[in-house]
Image (tube, rainbow, N blue to C red; front, side, top):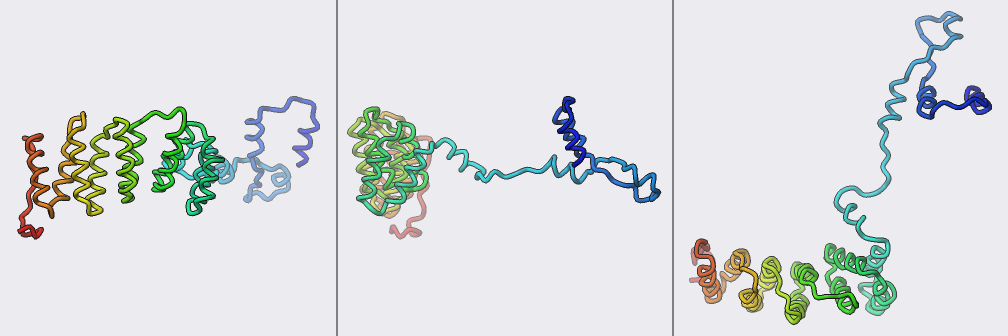
Length: 260
Protein backbone atom coordinates (compact mmCIF):
# COMPACT_ATOMS: atom_id res chain seq x y z
CA UNK A 1 0.00 0.00 0.00
CA UNK A 2 2.83 2.41 0.84
CA UNK A 3 4.30 1.61 -2.60
CA UNK A 4 1.03 2.56 -4.32
CA UNK A 5 0.70 5.79 -2.27
CA UNK A 6 4.22 6.72 -3.25
CA UNK A 7 3.38 6.27 -6.93
CA UNK A 8 0.22 8.37 -6.62
CA UNK A 9 2.06 11.25 -4.90
CA UNK A 10 4.98 11.18 -7.29
CA UNK A 11 5.07 13.78 -10.09
CA UNK A 12 7.11 11.58 -12.36
CA UNK A 13 5.27 10.03 -15.35
CA UNK A 14 3.64 6.72 -14.57
CA UNK A 15 4.75 3.66 -16.56
CA UNK A 16 2.47 2.13 -19.13
CA UNK A 17 -0.52 0.30 -17.63
CA UNK A 18 0.63 -3.04 -18.95
CA UNK A 19 4.09 -2.62 -17.39
CA UNK A 20 2.61 -1.47 -14.08
CA UNK A 21 0.23 -4.44 -13.97
CA UNK A 22 3.12 -6.77 -14.74
CA UNK A 23 5.13 -5.35 -11.84
CA UNK A 24 2.18 -5.45 -9.44
CA UNK A 25 1.62 -9.13 -10.22
CA UNK A 26 5.08 -9.97 -8.89
CA UNK A 27 4.35 -11.40 -5.46
CA UNK A 28 7.07 -11.25 -2.78
CA UNK A 29 8.00 -14.63 -1.40
CA UNK A 30 10.62 -15.55 1.22
CA UNK A 31 12.95 -18.48 0.67
CA UNK A 32 12.16 -21.13 3.29
CA UNK A 33 15.59 -22.81 3.28
CA UNK A 34 17.43 -19.65 4.33
CA UNK A 35 16.03 -18.22 7.56
CA UNK A 36 18.85 -15.76 8.23
CA UNK A 37 17.95 -12.12 9.07
CA UNK A 38 19.61 -10.85 5.92
CA UNK A 39 17.57 -13.07 3.66
CA UNK A 40 14.30 -12.43 5.50
CA UNK A 41 14.74 -8.66 5.45
CA UNK A 42 15.31 -8.61 1.69
CA UNK A 43 12.35 -10.37 0.04
CA UNK A 44 12.87 -12.07 -3.28
CA UNK A 45 10.28 -11.44 -5.98
CA UNK A 46 8.99 -14.16 -8.21
CA UNK A 47 5.97 -14.60 -10.42
CA UNK A 48 3.10 -16.55 -8.90
CA UNK A 49 1.93 -19.01 -11.57
CA UNK A 50 -1.39 -19.75 -9.88
CA UNK A 51 -2.29 -16.07 -9.51
CA UNK A 52 -1.30 -14.98 -13.00
CA UNK A 53 -2.96 -17.97 -14.62
CA UNK A 54 -6.17 -17.07 -12.81
CA UNK A 55 -6.02 -13.59 -14.31
CA UNK A 56 -5.08 -14.73 -17.81
CA UNK A 57 -7.60 -17.52 -18.30
CA UNK A 58 -10.62 -16.42 -16.27
CA UNK A 59 -13.68 -16.06 -18.56
CA UNK A 60 -16.82 -14.39 -17.32
CA UNK A 61 -20.31 -15.36 -18.57
CA UNK A 62 -22.36 -12.28 -19.41
CA UNK A 63 -25.71 -14.03 -18.87
CA UNK A 64 -26.79 -14.15 -22.52
CA UNK A 65 -27.95 -17.50 -23.92
CA UNK A 66 -25.63 -19.20 -26.36
CA UNK A 67 -26.29 -20.87 -29.70
CA UNK A 68 -28.79 -20.40 -32.55
CA UNK A 69 -31.59 -19.13 -30.30
CA UNK A 70 -29.60 -16.09 -29.25
CA UNK A 71 -28.32 -15.42 -32.77
CA UNK A 72 -31.92 -15.45 -33.97
CA UNK A 73 -33.14 -13.10 -31.26
CA UNK A 74 -30.39 -10.60 -32.01
CA UNK A 75 -32.15 -9.97 -35.32
CA UNK A 76 -35.38 -8.97 -33.54
CA UNK A 77 -35.68 -5.43 -32.22
CA UNK A 78 -36.89 -4.50 -28.75
CA UNK A 79 -40.22 -3.24 -30.08
CA UNK A 80 -40.85 -6.56 -31.84
CA UNK A 81 -39.91 -8.58 -28.76
CA UNK A 82 -42.26 -6.46 -26.63
CA UNK A 83 -45.05 -7.04 -29.16
CA UNK A 84 -44.50 -10.81 -29.14
CA UNK A 85 -44.58 -10.89 -25.36
CA UNK A 86 -47.80 -8.86 -25.22
CA UNK A 87 -49.53 -10.92 -27.88
CA UNK A 88 -48.80 -14.15 -26.03
CA UNK A 89 -49.91 -12.59 -22.74
CA UNK A 90 -53.34 -11.58 -24.07
CA UNK A 91 -53.95 -14.42 -26.55
CA UNK A 92 -56.78 -15.84 -24.42
CA UNK A 93 -58.44 -12.43 -23.86
CA UNK A 94 -59.86 -11.29 -27.19
CA UNK A 95 -60.76 -7.75 -26.16
CA UNK A 96 -57.35 -7.00 -24.62
CA UNK A 97 -55.63 -8.69 -27.56
CA UNK A 98 -57.37 -6.51 -30.15
CA UNK A 99 -56.56 -3.40 -28.12
CA UNK A 100 -52.91 -4.41 -27.85
CA UNK A 101 -52.70 -5.02 -31.60
CA UNK A 102 -54.11 -1.55 -32.33
CA UNK A 103 -51.93 0.29 -29.83
CA UNK A 104 -48.63 -1.57 -30.21
CA UNK A 105 -48.49 -3.92 -33.17
CA UNK A 106 -50.02 -1.61 -35.79
CA UNK A 107 -47.36 1.04 -35.19
CA UNK A 108 -44.42 -1.30 -35.78
CA UNK A 109 -42.11 -0.74 -38.71
CA UNK A 110 -42.28 -3.12 -41.66
CA UNK A 111 -39.29 -5.29 -40.71
CA UNK A 112 -40.35 -5.47 -37.05
CA UNK A 113 -43.86 -6.55 -38.04
CA UNK A 114 -42.52 -9.29 -40.30
CA UNK A 115 -40.10 -10.36 -37.55
CA UNK A 116 -43.07 -10.73 -35.17
CA UNK A 117 -44.89 -12.87 -37.75
CA UNK A 118 -41.88 -15.13 -38.35
CA UNK A 119 -41.14 -15.58 -34.64
CA UNK A 120 -44.75 -16.48 -33.84
CA UNK A 121 -44.66 -19.09 -36.62
CA UNK A 122 -41.42 -20.48 -35.19
CA UNK A 123 -43.02 -20.81 -31.76
CA UNK A 124 -46.12 -22.52 -33.25
CA UNK A 125 -48.31 -19.61 -32.13
CA UNK A 126 -50.15 -19.93 -35.43
CA UNK A 127 -53.43 -18.31 -34.36
CA UNK A 128 -51.55 -15.17 -33.34
CA UNK A 129 -49.44 -15.37 -36.49
CA UNK A 130 -52.59 -15.41 -38.62
CA UNK A 131 -53.85 -12.28 -36.84
CA UNK A 132 -50.57 -10.49 -37.52
CA UNK A 133 -50.71 -11.54 -41.16
CA UNK A 134 -54.15 -9.94 -41.44
CA UNK A 135 -52.69 -6.74 -39.98
CA UNK A 136 -49.82 -6.86 -42.49
CA UNK A 137 -52.27 -7.22 -45.38
CA UNK A 138 -53.82 -3.86 -44.45
CA UNK A 139 -50.50 -1.99 -44.49
CA UNK A 140 -49.74 0.41 -47.36
CA UNK A 141 -46.43 -1.31 -48.08
CA UNK A 142 -47.97 -4.80 -48.37
CA UNK A 143 -47.62 -6.63 -51.68
CA UNK A 144 -48.72 -10.24 -52.27
CA UNK A 145 -45.77 -12.48 -51.48
CA UNK A 146 -45.96 -16.25 -51.87
CA UNK A 147 -43.21 -16.76 -49.30
CA UNK A 148 -45.20 -15.02 -46.57
CA UNK A 149 -48.13 -17.26 -47.48
CA UNK A 150 -45.93 -20.33 -47.69
CA UNK A 151 -44.44 -20.06 -44.20
CA UNK A 152 -47.79 -19.37 -42.56
CA UNK A 153 -49.68 -22.09 -44.45
CA UNK A 154 -46.99 -24.65 -43.60
CA UNK A 155 -47.07 -23.59 -39.93
CA UNK A 156 -50.87 -23.97 -39.88
CA UNK A 157 -50.68 -27.39 -41.55
CA UNK A 158 -48.03 -28.52 -39.06
CA UNK A 159 -50.36 -27.60 -36.18
CA UNK A 160 -53.34 -29.29 -37.92
CA UNK A 161 -55.18 -25.98 -38.38
CA UNK A 162 -56.40 -27.07 -41.81
CA UNK A 163 -59.51 -24.86 -41.92
CA UNK A 164 -57.35 -21.77 -41.47
CA UNK A 165 -54.77 -23.16 -43.89
CA UNK A 166 -57.33 -23.69 -46.68
CA UNK A 167 -58.83 -20.21 -46.18
CA UNK A 168 -55.37 -18.71 -46.51
CA UNK A 169 -54.74 -20.96 -49.52
CA UNK A 170 -57.84 -19.63 -51.27
CA UNK A 171 -56.80 -16.04 -50.54
CA UNK A 172 -53.39 -16.73 -52.02
CA UNK A 173 -54.87 -18.23 -55.18
CA UNK A 174 -57.14 -15.18 -55.59
CA UNK A 175 -53.98 -13.10 -55.67
CA UNK A 176 -52.69 -15.30 -58.55
CA UNK A 177 -49.94 -16.86 -56.46
CA UNK A 178 -48.90 -20.49 -56.86
CA UNK A 179 -47.12 -22.18 -53.96
CA UNK A 180 -43.98 -24.20 -54.46
CA UNK A 181 -43.67 -27.98 -54.25
CA UNK A 182 -42.78 -27.92 -50.55
CA UNK A 183 -45.98 -26.07 -49.70
CA UNK A 184 -48.08 -28.50 -51.75
CA UNK A 185 -46.39 -31.40 -49.97
CA UNK A 186 -47.01 -30.10 -46.45
CA UNK A 187 -50.64 -29.18 -47.10
CA UNK A 188 -51.36 -32.56 -48.71
CA UNK A 189 -49.63 -34.24 -45.77
CA UNK A 190 -51.68 -32.15 -43.35
CA UNK A 191 -55.01 -33.14 -44.91
CA UNK A 192 -54.03 -36.80 -45.03
CA UNK A 193 -52.95 -36.65 -41.38
CA UNK A 194 -56.34 -35.17 -40.46
CA UNK A 195 -58.21 -37.86 -42.39
CA UNK A 196 -59.38 -35.63 -45.28
CA UNK A 197 -58.29 -37.38 -48.50
CA UNK A 198 -60.85 -35.41 -50.58
CA UNK A 199 -59.23 -32.11 -49.55
CA UNK A 200 -55.81 -33.58 -50.24
CA UNK A 201 -56.98 -34.45 -53.77
CA UNK A 202 -58.26 -30.90 -54.27
CA UNK A 203 -54.79 -29.58 -53.46
CA UNK A 204 -53.36 -32.19 -55.81
CA UNK A 205 -55.57 -31.00 -58.66
CA UNK A 206 -54.47 -27.44 -57.97
CA UNK A 207 -50.84 -28.60 -58.05
CA UNK A 208 -51.26 -30.05 -61.53
CA UNK A 209 -52.22 -26.56 -62.78
CA UNK A 210 -49.13 -24.93 -61.31
CA UNK A 211 -46.71 -23.38 -63.83
CA UNK A 212 -43.76 -24.83 -61.91
CA UNK A 213 -42.45 -28.26 -62.91
CA UNK A 214 -43.86 -31.02 -60.69
CA UNK A 215 -41.69 -32.89 -58.19
CA UNK A 216 -41.93 -36.47 -57.00
CA UNK A 217 -42.31 -35.88 -53.27
CA UNK A 218 -45.95 -34.70 -53.15
CA UNK A 219 -46.92 -37.60 -55.44
CA UNK A 220 -45.21 -40.09 -53.15
CA UNK A 221 -46.87 -38.57 -50.07
CA UNK A 222 -50.24 -39.02 -51.76
CA UNK A 223 -49.50 -42.55 -52.92
CA UNK A 224 -48.64 -43.53 -49.37
CA UNK A 225 -51.53 -41.68 -47.73
CA UNK A 226 -54.14 -42.99 -50.16
CA UNK A 227 -53.46 -46.67 -49.53
CA UNK A 228 -56.88 -47.07 -47.85
CA UNK A 229 -58.47 -45.40 -50.90
CA UNK A 230 -57.41 -47.50 -53.93
CA UNK A 231 -59.52 -45.67 -56.52
CA UNK A 232 -57.99 -42.29 -55.69
CA UNK A 233 -54.56 -43.86 -55.40
CA UNK A 234 -54.76 -45.46 -58.86
CA UNK A 235 -55.58 -42.07 -60.34
CA UNK A 236 -52.53 -40.47 -58.74
CA UNK A 237 -50.37 -43.45 -59.66
CA UNK A 238 -51.33 -43.17 -63.32
CA UNK A 239 -50.37 -39.47 -63.36
CA UNK A 240 -47.13 -40.26 -61.56
CA UNK A 241 -46.10 -42.87 -64.13
CA UNK A 242 -46.87 -40.50 -67.01
CA UNK A 243 -44.96 -37.55 -65.53
CA UNK A 244 -42.03 -39.59 -64.14
CA UNK A 245 -41.66 -42.56 -66.51
CA UNK A 246 -38.21 -43.43 -65.18
CA UNK A 247 -39.39 -43.65 -61.57
CA UNK A 248 -41.28 -46.44 -59.88
CA UNK A 249 -43.80 -46.42 -57.06
CA UNK A 250 -43.95 -49.06 -54.37
CA UNK A 251 -47.11 -51.17 -54.20
CA UNK A 252 -47.25 -53.12 -50.92
CA UNK A 253 -49.06 -56.43 -50.72
CA UNK A 254 -52.78 -55.76 -50.50
CA UNK A 255 -53.34 -58.15 -47.63
CA UNK A 256 -51.05 -56.08 -45.38
CA UNK A 257 -53.31 -53.07 -45.58
CA UNK A 258 -56.59 -54.89 -45.76
CA UNK A 259 -57.33 -53.78 -49.33
CA UNK A 260 -58.56 -57.15 -50.58
